[in-house]
Length: 335
Image (cartoon, rainbow, N blue to C red; front, side, top):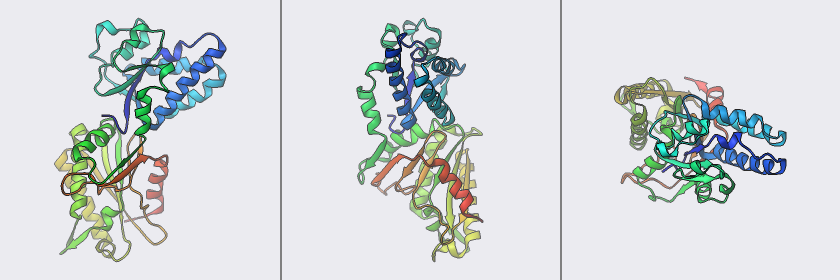
C-alpha cells in the first residue's frame, strides 16, 4: 500500500531521448510535465545514490524545447526541495532486465525496491517496458495507475471503516519511512485537554494512547538513529482549562513527557509548547508535516477509538506547510 506517498521510478532515458521533430517533442514533453505535476501531489521518485538518475533528468530537461523546458525545470526543482527525489541504495535487480542505456541501468538497479507503485518507461525501450509495474509514458494519463493515484489525493473515512493496522500501512508507513529530517505534528488540543492531578498534570488518555501509537510507528523506522526527530506542537493558556490556569507547569509536564518517550523509543522526540491568547490562537486544524508532504488531518491526534478502529476522518495534502510552521513560532508567545 502507498496511499499517502506513492513510490515511483522514472526511467531517466525518458528525459534525455525525446522525439527529434518539434511537434512530437512538444507533445512528448507535455506528457512528462504532467507526470511531474502528479508527482508533486502525492508521489516520491526513487533515485540512485550516485546521482545518475537525477543528473540525467536535469541534463535531459536542459535540452528540451524552450516552451517546455522552464516549466519542467521549475517542477524538478520543487520536487528536489520537497525531498520527493528519494535516494534508494542499489541492488536486488534482475540481470535480464538491465537496460543498455547507462542512466537507465541505475534505475534498473533500484527497481526491486519494496512497494514500488509504478515505473514510467519509454515505448521504444523493450527492455524497460518488460519491468514489473511499468507504464508507457504515452499511456500514463489514462492508466489505472494514474487513476488510483488521483483517488488517493484525499482520503475520507467513515467511522470505524479502517482498523489501526490499515491506517499504519496506508498512512504512517509511507510517511515515516521517507522522513530523513523530521516529522511535525500540530494539535492544540493535546495541551488544552490536559488535566491537573495534585501538583502535576496528565495528558488525556485518548491523546496519550494515540501519541504512543504514532511514536511506536515512527520508531519502527528510525529507532536508534540520531535523525530524524518527531516534534509535537501544541499550546496552553486558553479558556478555563487546567493548563490555562497553570501554563508554566503544564508546559514543563509536556516537555518531560516527550523526554520520557525519547528514552522509551530511542528516538529524538521534542515537545514545542506555546501560550495562546485571545486573538492569537493556535489553528484549530490539525496537521502532520514531514520532509515531503503536509497533511491536513481532521481529527489530529485523536484518531484511535477504544476498539482499535479509526474515527471518521478526512486527510488531504495541504499546500500551506511552511505557513503553518511559521504561524506557530511567530504568532504565539513563548512559555
